[in-house]
Image (cartoon, rainbow, N blue to C red):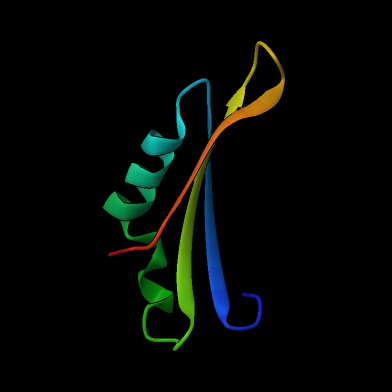
Length: 63
């Protein structure tokens, strides 16, 4: 947690950011922070093994 925000990251390898965000929402990893009074930010990212770099990222709120 950082100040008024809670960030939840999910990383995938050779997939895509949308897949990572779907997992966060499906498994409801953010639920334990939902009543903390802080703003929740969900971030999905993909690591490309071929280029050895992050190549896709997407942010969302739990709503």
